[in-house]
Length: 301
Figure 1 (tube, rainbow, N blue to C red):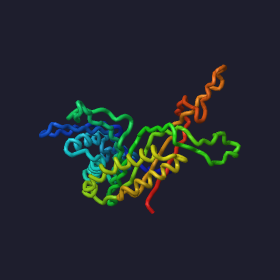
Figure 2: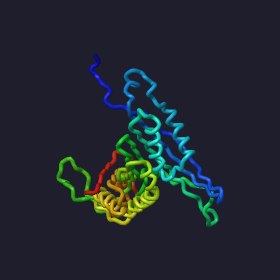
Figure 3: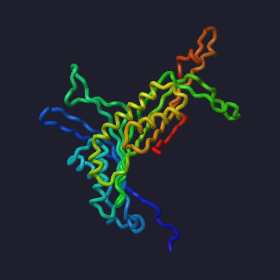
Figure 4: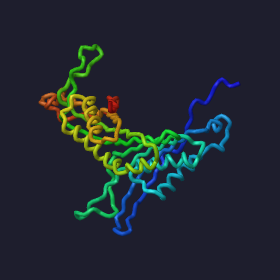
């Protein structure tokens, strides 16, 4: 008799890239939507692991092809609705699958302006920033939807401080500062009230597309305007304001890694006054790691 058991299992397809072109035949205007998608399935799949019973396996290639087929048959915007549609499809089609996870990231393509007019079919990539969606559809439990912003790179050259911590700690070398560079790659997610059915998600389509620019604006406004006493306090204020402005959101999470820029010590240069510290600092050394990593989740009471 075996003294072990399969405690948990899921499987799926990762890094499925798909681009859909929406073509308005009347106006000639086209829109592009590019995603990288992951699907993961749970259910009555134990014997596929323990007994090599592949009859229970929905091949990962089938999951990939399902993404392409549903992208052809249905709108993919907003991505929250498409991800929920995809997750619910797996539950409806495969009765032994009881939970379906769909995670996607959307590439930012911005329409070009040519000769002062928006071009009907030409775009420029918006950099590293991505719109993210995470959906879990569970049999008998409804659909959970999380939306987000990922890899939004920001930097402010002043207007950030960090002081008031215990500098007497013998392990602390970091000097207090009232002015520093603040840079981060914003990872912000917001969780919606649970949905009972796919149709409930579809009915909120406009809210999803409204919430994304709202959360983005809140993030950038607080980042730029506030004289930040700490990353912790600033991210808490951001999360609170998203909850204030988007009533159907129940929880907001921020993860902000510090992207450090240290003053370059030029005091060693002889015969020249090259003071490059404090308010005289102009030359900095970017450092990728190690780095601070700050996280918080703010929910409604």
